[in-house]
View 1: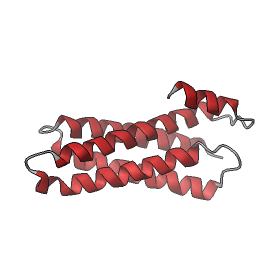
View 2: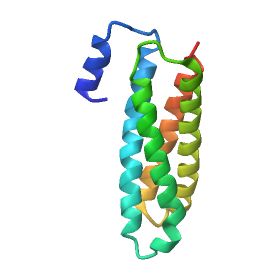
View 3: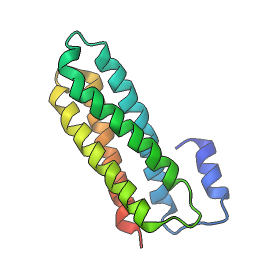
View 4: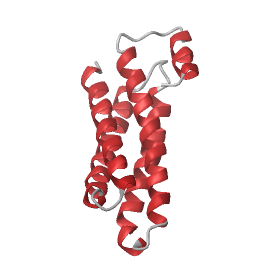
Length: 134
């Protein structure tokens, strides 16, 4: 987590008991979103780009959901539990799908291996937050 983001979350008047879990979730979502975007870009540079279409699509879907999830989780004031849970579940599903697809290419492309690892870590972080939600 960046120094500024952590300082911003700690400066908020509302301090949820799950703040460390929230911080990990946001950091993981931001990391995964950036990694997935980069993986999609790297896939576009591969000689077998036609075979990477599903991977590229899942990378971009995952990046979008990770970004939206990070933004929602970062809003600490009066979250709507139903929409927060649905968003976390959607992010987990996108991360798992992307990790599975990137995993198919991990032996051939380091960017896919790294992306799969980031997606798995993000899914875990989102699940941890989902597990501690009241």
